[in-house]
Length: 252
Image 1: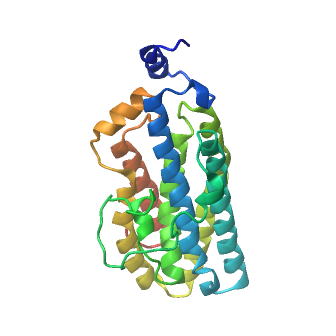
Image 2: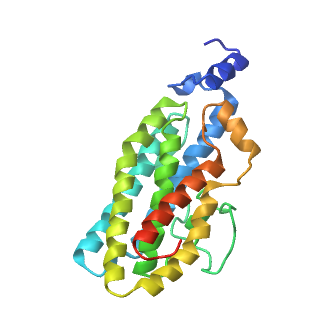
């Protein structure tokens, strides 16, 4: 490539790939850093929230599963942070940079707004209400993460795309653990409370896909940082969530 920014943009628009910070033009860098910060902040906030309910698990197996999820989500954040370090991020200070466990009141409704403190997705500003509620949130968000990671595994910055592809199977396992936990709770007669949690979390997880029509999407698509429109990703998630919930006798 040459130093001509437009030639780089044409290269990216034709499915070109970048592999090192020194090859990244300023506008691309800004969008890439936002993407990575959102993932890291959401992972750390999600892990912090789930850590608070580990001891609410009904048995040792469930508590081990919850602890494993917290550990791996924190590790996933660390993997992306290492890439951010190549762009100058002070990773040593990042872990304590924000109050990751901070939450809004349960009845807050912020739509797709970000936290004022960090770049976590809006859904990670809401508190969990016990073990069953945490399992439902983990299921719905896990399915959403699966859809989103497949999209992000195609981005044009190769080191980051590789990390997303590596962590995708572990995130799928988190969703499988949520399904197992939900099945146990339903067998124990908790279906009514779980349905209440589904009703609460479903619109909040849906908001994590962003606005249906977004000018930002076209900008990111031109840089190879997005490929599939928000509406299509959300529809896929809705279908997958409906299929899983229906099989368990819950309404989507």
